[in-house]
Amino acid sequence: MGKEKGAIAENIRKYRNKLGISQDVLSKRANLAFHTIAKIEAGSTPDPRIETVKKIADALGITINDLME
Image 1 (spheres, rainbow, N blue to C red):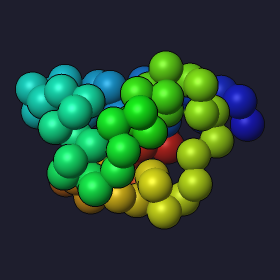
Image 2: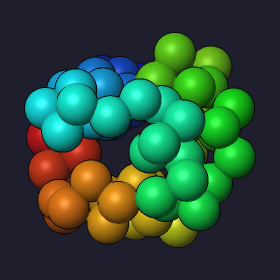
Image 3: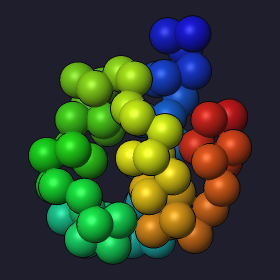
């Protein structure tokens, strides 16, 4: 399961970079604290809550499955 969690962090970064937005912009779009995004991307929060992942996916214009792959 740890591999999947690393995938979430990598995919958030990948899709965020595709959109050309910063962690700060993503946090505002997702209505989450900046440190939440930063910690997930850094792997400090390896198991983010599904509600958090949903907000991030919505802010990136993708599905939760896109983040989990």
